[in-house]
Length: 296
Image (tube, rainbow, N blue to C red; front, side, top):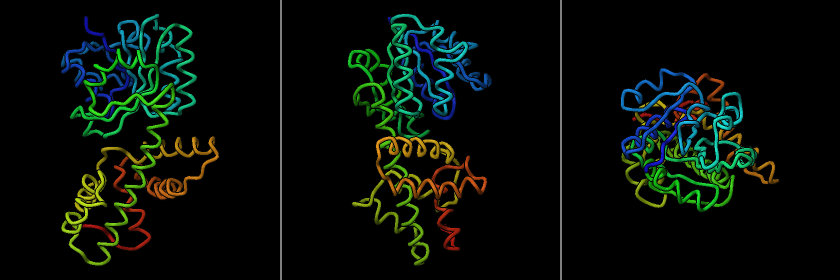
């Protein structure tokens, strides 16, 4: 008998991830704080619940993907939360990006009710969520991971168990270090090309296939040239992740100067009221310093 899935959080990422699970044949009970966001999925066959508690009562595996650490804590441990509806044998998978140490706290609280937890943040943006090609980095027990693997395979392609509770979240923070600095590299390459008067599309074609190639160069740079700053991943969410990176580095006594620079540049973007734009808008922080604009 197929696992019954509960899905909490139907935003840019959550809605297409849940839709892909339904396409894979899983029955889904869904909850979103703004109920209207659930309507599309209900029309496609999902059942809507009034609380995370009710989702958990009706499910074998509960997936959460919400904005930030306090949101996850509230959904899991707050009034009418997952913990209240949990029973032995249920697995909770948090696919948000949050603090690794708080993940461990929540896992310990669930374990007292014989409920297993996996932390399984994702990478791949809204395109990966829609296409079902997300990278999923998982922390938790091997046998729980094995049980949930068919569920992960409904949402992603590159699925890895990294280690114990919190290891998935720490891996996601490593991912965000690499992503944010690749974004800055992309922006600086465009700035140099623009200042030098190059045909930017030809320049991109020349460098994207070699050692400089990156997801950011292939996917975000063409959007910058078209002045398309619509979000695949919003600046304010990237900033939340970078704060988690810097907090984790601080706990470990580690200096990460590159991430600190990107975080400060994004501060200027947020100060300009552009926090809801896509992360490719980082280029505007450089444009304002240089007094030039990158465009085709």
